Length: 298
Image: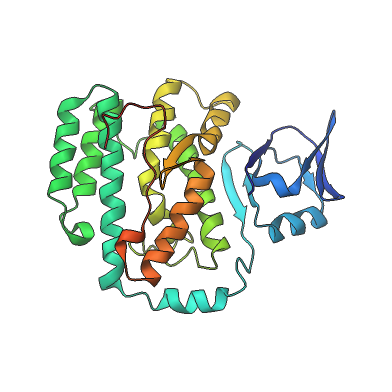
């Protein structure tokens, strides 16, 4: 099982040699490609051989390219994530919206639960109670937009009443960076399972090539929110970005087993497809809060 999140920030050349990714910079380092789950290229001065790109793609390693401001700008997705990707795509096109709305309802419900738990953890008990009420009021497919109401209460409690997700500030820059890392991790798993990232079950923006990843990542966003809170939100520099990338190495519990978050994403994504194939919503598996936390959370 791949597990390493490799981040390259300095000028260097990357090449493939004897199944190792060789990093030639001021020092020469090697990482076996079988260990790499995600490769983040933070510097536009990095050069990379085609043979290494091809090998990493074959092994379903997610390669994320950053722009000149060191923000994630693009990623590499293999043509064929699974041997039966054509069959998977045919099935995905035929997914019945009347049935997938149950999956979406569970995703939104779980997202609000995670938001409520973070509010409790941070001492916002009144706002957490409001979110508990939204969870009780949830309707199929969230037709009354409890997600939107919860988001307003949640973000205002965490970042202040004047905070807006549309504002151009450091908090949103940090949140967006963390969300983009999560999005890439989900794109990797969707592609590895042979499905298209474009066709979502709720998100349906013709300009968004990652609609399905945008759907699936929703319950994981509070992990980014908490990290940004802990950082203090004064700056988005290399150290802050490193902390946000390190979210994928957090330990969580899923299916009564402890896993790194990047593996929990793999298990959760697979369970999502299994639940649709079996037409059984109970097959969906969500992560639980961090292992070391008290049992006072849902």
